[in-house]
Amino acid sequence: MKSIASFCLFASLLFAASQATAALEEASLPSPQQEELLVPANVELTFTGPVDLARSTAILLDAQGKALPLGKPFLSGPEGSIFKIPLDPSMAPGLYTLDWRVLSMDGRSAEGRYQFRVDP
Image (cartoon, rainbow, N blue to C red):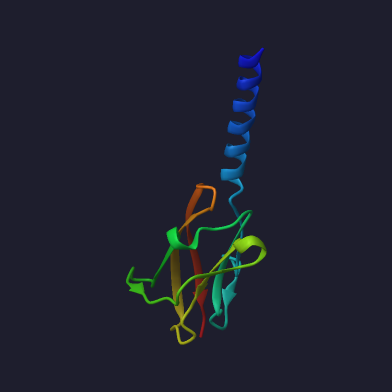
């Protein structure tokens, strides 16, 4: 009986972990489809749980793939679930790519590539 209960608990934890990993990234602002007329102050990635800021990274690339300076990322929102990356307000018009990797406080990780355009 103990082995059946243990298996059921393990199976439910495995299912919950796979669902949580799939839902780690909840939204990003501004919308990747939106073309910005002004440079946004921050790119915001919103997650379903707290983010480990010390082990999360972001790299901003211009259209030629050159890394650009960013402000120091910080957290906000419920339980530190919003990862904010400050942008330089004097960014030139063009296409930008943000490569990011985030680790949650419970050890799950997510990474992605986010593109946005700054128009003149």
